[in-house]
Length: 314
Image (tube, rainbow, N blue to C red; front, side):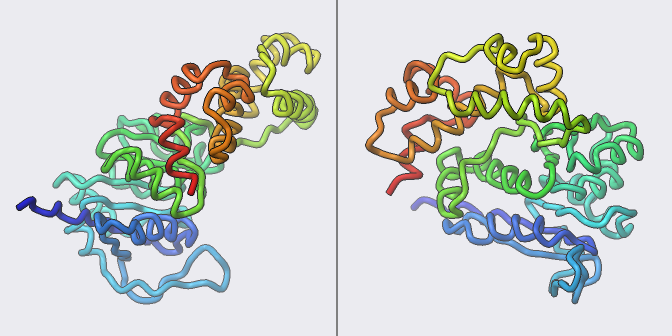
């Protein structure tokens, strides 16, 4: 008789005042996974009522810091920046030494950094906090653009929705991409984005933003056309070099990468209509052929258009 796999124990470490949205992402993704593959516990250095960063909202946490000693995965949501309690940092270090997987959402990366878990590693956090993380912890290679970064045993993500991307990614890493797709479908959310995609970082130059707004609006409305970077530059009345620099500043990616991203987003929407063939999806989104669509889809989402359609259509 086949032995049932052990339940993977996920422990969320709530450091007060905790970002409630980040905390509930983890509990929602893993606590309602539906297959019994995960158990979820929320703990805090001091169990009981803890404050959140949302005015007027507090949470009751029943488990104490010792819960980390039994965790297979520890997730640290964002918290108001400052020095985390020493007992929490010591518990994180212990969990890491015995092989637990450690992940952070948003400013939760500061706790991992304070525990010494990010030294010599790439890491990310919400773009607003990235400068402070780099200044306070110079041994970390901070990437302010990435949505999430997988360094093996230690993972970090940007803020808010990027935490959802990371949690879905972890399910895919544990149980395959089809499991991540199914979880995304149950949560009525799109397939998680690849970690290398950029955070949206507001540009400080409004004129540049206005120029790109016209370019991106035109491109988004004409994805079925074979648009090139030269076409975008001509539409924006700027050189290709200037266009590339402006896209990197505003979107954290090249014009070509942005175009592919938009085509794939449009493809995902079309794939949810089972009456549209994969070939037609490729044509309408400017990706040309079903073969080309499959190649880009696999590279970005690690799955196939057909698998995506199967998960997101009744």
